[in-house]
Each structure stands twice: as C-alpha cells, then as structure tokens.
View 1 (spheres, rainbow, N blue to C red):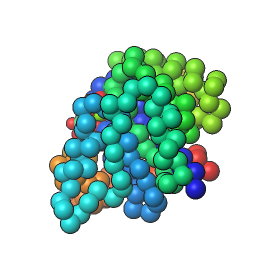
View 2 (cartoon, helix red, strand yellow):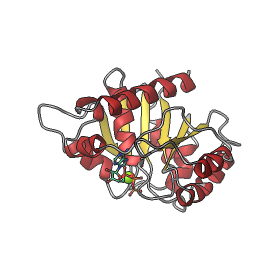
View 3 (cartoon, rainbow, N blue to C red):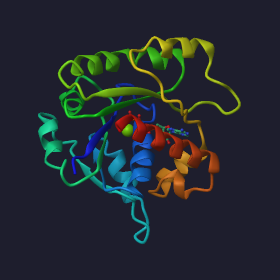
Length: 215
Ligand SMILES: Nc1ncnc2c1ncn2[C@@H]1O[C@H](COP(=O)(O)OP(=O)(O)OP(=O)(O)O)[C@@H](O)[C@H]1O
Ligand SMILES: [Mg+2]
C-alpha cells in the first residue's frame, strides 16, 4: 500500500480549504484507510474532528503537522505505507515552506476557489507554485474546485473565462454554498451525515472524480 497524497491549497484565506478537506477526506474515510493532516497553525481541521460526539468519531485519522515547516514531505513519507489516501489541509499562505514542501510528495493539488474575479486573481500565485513544483514532481496533478457557488446561478461568464485561463482544469463538480457544510463542522462530521441530499451528491461526485484522476 502506498498512499496517494492529496493537498487542498490556496494562499487565499476562507475559500473553503478546511471545509472541503474534511468533507472529502471524511467521505474517503468511510471506505478507505485515510489520514488527514492538519497543516494549518489555526488548527481548524483538528478542532473540526474533535467536535465529533464520542460515539460518532470523525471517519478518518487526523493529526497535525502544523508545527513542522521544513521538509514536510519527509514527514508525510513516513505514513505512506500505512494509508491508502493522505489528505493535507494547507495553511492560507504560500510564503511559508509548508505547502511547497508538501507539494513535492503530492499526487494531486486541489485549489478551492470562490468563482469571483478577485478570488481567482489571488489564485494565480498558487498556480505558479504548483507549476514550479511539477517540474520536479512529475506525479503532481492539479485541479481548481469551485466552492460556495450560488444556488440558482451558474458561474458568471467573467469567472468562467478566468478559470479557463488557468494551467489546470476545474473539476466538473461544483460545490454550492449550503448550510449543511457549516453544520457538518459544528457536528464534527461530513455532509454525508447531514440531511441535505444535494450536498451529499456533490461530495460523492467529487470523490468519484478524484478517484478517476488518481487511477
Ligand atoms: N460550500 C460552502 N457552503 C457554505 N459555507 C461554506 C462552504 N465552504 C466554506 N464555507 C464556510 O466559509 C468559511 C471559510 O471556510 P474554511 O474555513 O473551510 O476556509 P479555509 O480556506 O480553510 O480558510 P483559512 O484560509 O482561514 O484556513 C467557513 O465559515 C465555512 O463554514
Ligand atoms: Mg482552513
């Protein structure tokens, strides 16, 4: 067993890195052996998992590597043989070494973006970093993931044309703004355990796409 390593990263704060890491890793955790690494000193992923009721633990292992900034790739390597998938919730900055180092060992970088011009402009930095690292790590793939889309509105034309300018494609699945995602955090769970079938479908579709990419 050699784990596939999936990073959720964007220097932009509040675009949904933690929310999506928890939901995707939690969904994979229901069927696979999964480790979720909290790389953010804010510790949101760790707090999220710790919010679970004692009798309903978060569906995968969670640990923090936020205090390690140097050679994170070597640290992650220690766990590759113990898991099928390792997900990493990255800190919202690219000027620290964490993300650059973790990318060296990643199979897939997922970049959550709110589909608005300002959010897309600020994702250009992470695109550059991913593209630089992929010269060294030839296994590294990357996808944009539209998050907090507005119900009953398709992604605006201006945002779509900016998305199309990125070096890597967007997932077919878009994640909409839904209360279920906030509820999942409060319950230390995922939307798969919430009463919202649309959110469940989004996460299940995303999981299928990720598996297909990593095949
Ligand atoms: N699809 C969604 N629907 C509703 N609310 C969402 C959705 N995605 C994220 N949020 C909310 O947006 C806020 C920011 O999300 P989150 O903390 O996951 O972002 P982040 O990128 O990890 O932030 P940071 O850069 O601070 O680590 C949170 O309040 C979260 O509940
Ligand atoms: Mg976060």
